[in-house]
Image (cartoon, rainbow, N blue to C red; front, side):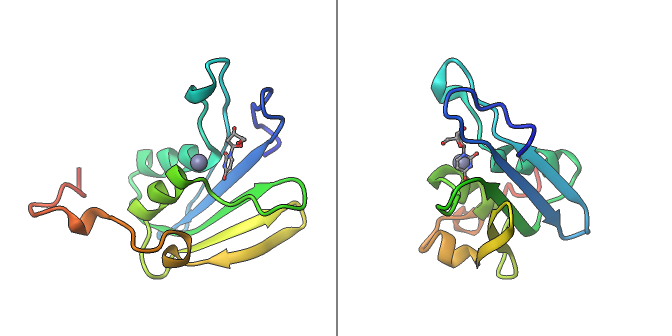
Length: 125
Ligand SMILES: O=c1ccn([C@H]2C[C@H](O)[C@@H](CO)O2)c(=O)[nH]1
Ligand SMILES: [Zn+2]
């Protein structure tokens, strides 16, 4: 969160993933003068995880400032869903620590995921 580039919103966010293999991948939101091109902290952390060859999120921590819960946006809920399973926990944090923890069904009910696509699955590529 301290490294966030968020001059337009003034809303720094940090995300950290603990993968199934015990590695940590972190990222921050990176905004852009062309506003829609900004990327969320969660998206960056997922990209780093995939780049390292990991495919499963054990825990993801999302942190922002202020009193409101910094809950992942709709797009990031779907991105997290792709690499989540029934054990995945999504932790919504403030600077003081975890405020709320959710599983993927709470975060994104009735979701569409890789298993809905007909075989052969493309989830290995
Ligand atoms: O869970 C969230 C919510 C918001 N943002 C970013 C997007 C944008 O840069 C800023 C304000 O929406 O916060 C994230 O990175 N993750
Ligand atoms: Zn997002």
